[in-house]
Length: 103
Image (cartoon, rainbow, N blue to C red; front, side):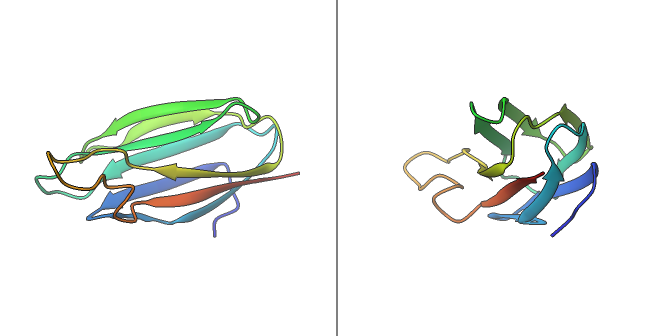
């Protein structure tokens, strides 16, 4: 678990590191997201209407800065929805985590 507003998130072969992120409601978050080198494409999706989050970003080996401010406490899954033809999505293969927003 991480409790801070500056976070580094790395996507690899069907995992995110860290897989559990804790942030505060109403506090701006700066997320540095990237993927490990390799052939598989990855992205980051975080969607929660209640928290005011609608994030979908492609990940490259260079960090991508994603800024957001969660509005209310709660928990939302983040995941990669990439998939190769005829195979399960990366999300279905376990590439996800939890964003927890606390007071």
